[in-house]
Amino acid sequence: MARKGFLGRQEPPRGDEARPPVLVRRIERGVPLELDTGCDFEEALRYTAESEDRMTLTVFPRPDVEEIAEFATAWQLHPLLTEDLLQGGQRPKLERYGDVLFVAVRSARYLDAREEVEFSEFHLVMRSQNLAIICQDGRLVNGATIGPDVLRHADDADAPLGNGAPILDDHELLSLGPEAMLYRLLDAVVDGYRPVLDGLQVDLEQIERQVFSGDPAAAERIYRLSQEVIDVQHAATSLAKILLRLHEGASKYRIPAELQAYLQDVGDHLTRVNTETNELRELLAQILNVNATLVAQRQNEDMKKISGWAAILFAPTLIAAVYGMNFDIMPELHWVFGYPLAVGAMVAFAALLYFTFKRKKWM
Image 1 (cartoon, helix red, strand yellow):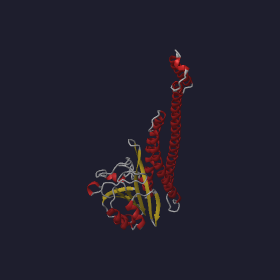
Image 2 (cartoon, rainbow, N blue to C red; image 1 turned 135 degrees about the vertical axis):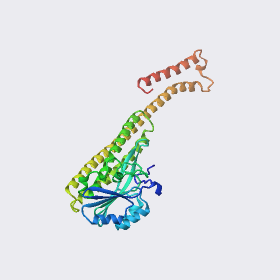
Image 3 (tube, rainbow, N blue to C red; image 1 turned 90 degrees about the vertical axis):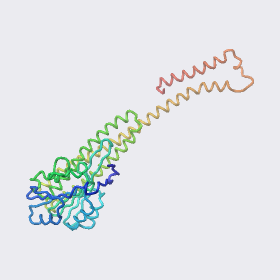
Image 4 (spheres, rainbow, N blue to C red; image 1 turned 180 degrees about the vertical axis):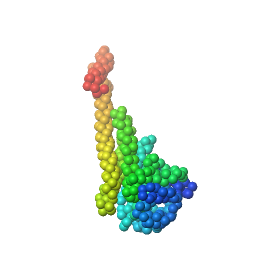
């Protein structure tokens, strides 16, 4: 499950035995109807074309090339859009190809044991009354891996959110149009950043204690956590641009006022996420500066001790050097008390310097 940077993409397991089928849910007047597996995509389009009160939600739990190609052909998607769906690894963005709306978003979850943020990529394609959700990394919005049995119940088809809060649970909201499903998923993505920030905050507090304990590994940990915060900031900032474009196009595409209010609420939540992310980044920068100051201070203390001991050893070395000179006439060599006097002078000078430095807290 290793993540390789913000755009890193973990390839989900392939193979029919490990890959749930494509799921299609029909909706009429805001009420979800029967669940289809492996539905004909053209049939879903015909279903919604018969009445404005009808919608469909198509979920690709683990898409493969054949499914995406068939889907693109049925929906008559632009070749550039089809290429994005096939390749994955897209930055969060919003694009329109005629009557088709394409949104790429990334949900996040925090892996506390590894102190990493793991991103999951989702592609949302909306055409007329139809919405398709493509789970590019084979994970739910909450980061849980989609196994062959994850979507075994009919209600699970509503829930690529993976938080016990299916997309289709609010029938009144669904009655406002297919955009309701889109906004519902965007809301779940934004809400998913909350526990990520909480996890980063806990690690930040641990790092603060680590810095003041003098742990030499603190600087590396600060740097790694800063990179995770930057990744979250990039994802949240990109999502904010998407929400802004959706809000700006609300009037042009005749989005109901209730949905516009819902979108505004999602934007408010994301604004708080961006604010807290900026605060975390600033705090980490401050902690890094404090750590550098403390390291310099400890190095200065070490230099004081080294200098003090060097000065203490200098006096005995000087006296010994004088007595070690090879001159024929040196009266000190013939004194009766010359040796004890020299040793005493060495000890006295060393003791004097030691207590002097000790008083000045150099030792």
